[in-house]
Image (cartoon, rainbow, N blue to C red; front, side, top):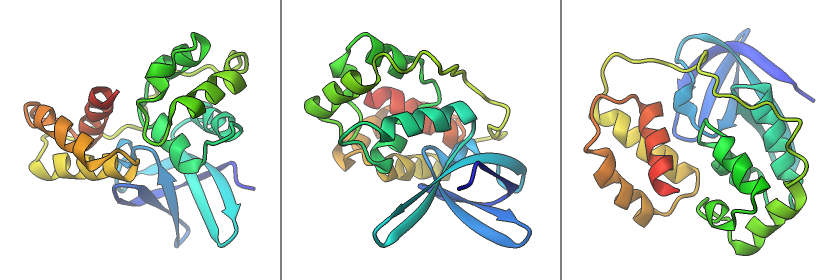
Length: 196
């Protein structure tokens, strides 16, 4: 129903953002909310999913990310939450390479993806990703001058919202605390790399 929303980002929380469009705030679930800039006008590509008693908007920085999300949803056993967790890392080249090269081990590192689901992803998508032109789009990424402890805490909450186990998050937290002056988005990206 919706292709994109263009408005002001008024809230950033661990699992979603709020985008204000002419006085109406839309809650949009996103993979890494901290890649959005608070109080800035942005275009967010969206996918509306309606299920039994649930209705959600899922948001993406680029049209290509939205296309990949839709392809993942067509895989048996992949729901919106799992698809968002897979897309949380902004560089999707590794994901596409894993699918095309039948790298089941890479795919099973995502939360909620077991060996059977990983094999299904490869089976369903192996020859269907050539039309995607994915690139890292940092034009919408927020840049902050100085990181704080709260940014690391927010990043850990974002990883938990993506479905990673608390014990795994605790393990990478030790490594993340060694990194200093990172933005929340950078902490999330670093955490995702450590979890894979």
